[in-house]
Length: 265
Image (tube, rainbow, N blue to C red; front, top):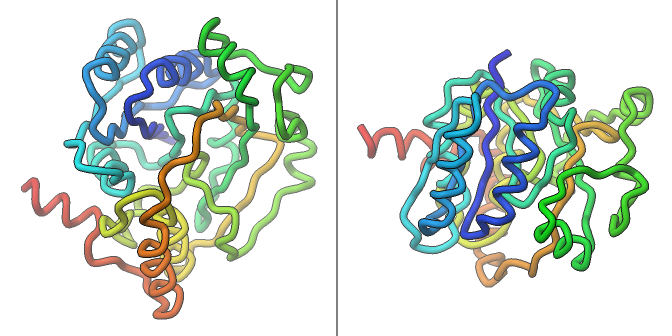
């Protein structure tokens, strides 16, 4: 399997540096890494270039102009540049367990997209980690706010494996799918601007197209660095797009990854 790791980021280079450090620390490295950059400044570019210089992993910096929060379009841009057949999405504030990529490879299953969980770090612990550049955590590490999610166990992962068609609890900070399934529904909907619901709407269309959901726990662990909440002023309009996809059983969005492809061509 050629696994592409997509990392979304926007103007938090010190966090991205730790995430990329945890990528280099994987027991199985991804086939390629693509940074989905929603318009960051030169500091982020420097972090990415440093990673490219000192890593053997094929890495692409996918940058778009900063004209507001456009995570959907940014991820579409990145996936358009990908060459892997399996996509794992994370955010640029998620430090990865050393077996994160291996666990996602083991969890991949035809006909399913995968939803993973996260461990939340406290504000105090996040500040310490950013200063000391620590990427190593265990179940006993201080500052873990939902400690049970830090348990890594193949046995427990099999016991608590859950397959369903629900959209609640969808988070693209730890999500995986086959590239062809993603393209089949035309990727993320570029109509989403501002924070919220672009990942849930993608999942609705995947489920409507016949791709089921697979929840995994106690594997593919990631540690979420604390930060202030994003501005949610666009949430109402974004929820209207999501509601329309649910009500109308939509499988294919008009303004998706093909719109970018056609525009660039």
